[in-house]
Structure formats: C-alpha cells, structure tokens
Image 1 (cartoon, one colour):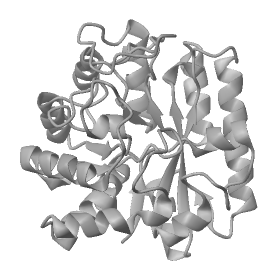
Image 2 (image 1 turned 135 degrees about the vertical axis):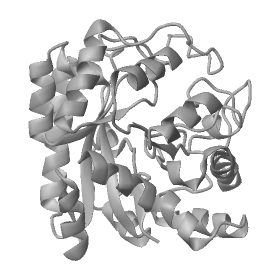
Image 3 (image 1 turned 90 degrees about the vertical axis):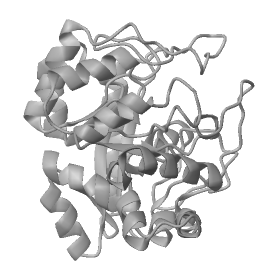
Image 4 (image 1 turned 45 degrees about the vertical axis):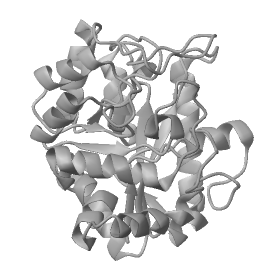
Length: 323
C-alpha cells in the first residue's frame, strides 16, 4: 500500500551525523522507502532557534544538502513543486520528495524571504517549533530543564506578522502546518485563512493528553476546513505518561486513528511519522516496516479503502487542493 508521510527529520540527521539518503542507519533512507512502498515523503528542514547557528543560514545549508541527495538519487526520487509532479513521478516509477520547513522564523520577519523559500521549492511550513518566534507561540516551550509535555499554552496566538505570514503562505500555495503551534495560534490560523491546512505530526489529546496533541474541538475544526492531521510515531505523544520515555507501539497508533475516525470520520487523518526526530524506542523501527501498521489497521476492522485514505489518499486530496 502506498505511503505519504508528512514529516521526517532525516536531512538534519544527515547534516549532523553524515551518511547519505540512499542507505543509512536512520529511520528513513531510499532503500527502506522502496521496501515500504512510499509514494511521497516530506523532508523537513528543522532549525532549532535555541542553538547558536544563524537560522537562515542553517536552513539554506539544509536545503542545499536535500537537493544534493535528491540529485544523487534521481533514478529513485524527484522533488515536487506542484501536484502534477506527484502524478508524473508515480507514472515514471519514481518516489516523490516535498521540501518543508520546521520553524517558520527562518525568514527573519521578512515576507520577501518567505517568497524566496517558495521559489526554492518549499511547499509546507511548520509555523513554530518549541520556541516563541516572530510568527507565534508553541504549544510547549523548551527549557534547559527539558519541557513540561502537559502544560498547554492556550493564551498566546499569532503575532501581527504571523497573520501576514499565513495569509502570504496561502496566497503562494505553501501548506500551513499547525503542529507545534499553541492552541490560540491554531484558532488564529482558522480565523485568518480560508483554505485547508494540516497538523503534519500531531495526535489526539483525548487519547494522550500532551500539549503537542490536538483537542477534540481543534480536530473537529480542522476537519470542517477539510484539513488533515498526521499521526506522530513518538511514544510520548501516543500514550500518556507523566515520566515520559514511552515506547512507541503500533497498537497506540491504531488507537489514535480509530479515535479520530470516530470523532470526525476517516477522511481527516494521515501519517506524520516524525521519523529521525523522535526517540528510537520504536516497535515500527523504520520506513520499511510500514506494512506493520497497515496489518494492524486491518485487524482493528478498517476496510482497505479506509486504510488507503490514512496511508496516502487523504493527504493527496489536500495537496491537490493547495498545490
């Protein structure tokens, strides 16, 4: 069954640790993706504002590495800039790669730079990570003492610049991603935009009550906008534990998918593994093992058509709308 995954941090791991995209020891490489029957992988350029690197320079270096690796492996994968590219690549027997940003602040509060990212091929942006930025505020804030996963930020929304930012993203055709964004920011995105948007790697807060997951009301409103949320494979976001360090298990992924289905229907849930950005205590260890989740969903009673929606069709529907 084809796979579309809305989020991974593999390019940063290659940048930090070396190796190549074709074959490595990480969760995602091209050989594992072929075994997992991948149609499309979103590759996030993750920049941590808490580090000393200049954010804009770091983002540019990550994008350069992304394109170098794609070019080296153009017999297996090609970048996409429009929805038609996805269909063309599939027809040609190639996997697709979408360039995304995880940390919207890499524009230095300048919409001209946002437009240049679009010209570079960026087609989705996660507005915040775990630090406040010029756009808005996250749903949990990193500190040197780690972070309280259960302290939910409901007060701080988008800044004035953040409102301009999401409006320009929508005009350009860059998918707005509200994963990591605080609750008030989510409602601001809903208020100041009109098109579908995503929570690329977030789960259901009613199943696991961490701040990074979405409340029932948020899920309902995302569905009403015809958006999609991607199930995050991080154990701490799948199963509640005050001490953290939860093993990521397929049965917990299934619980979130079934809960979202029962809440709003199967049409609004997809996959956002967060591979190579999460703890490695994983039952589903890498991209080659995606059939394990498919089999578990069959065992849980989902029909093949429903599983296809989760694995790729729901996300493709949104991509066709925005791209």
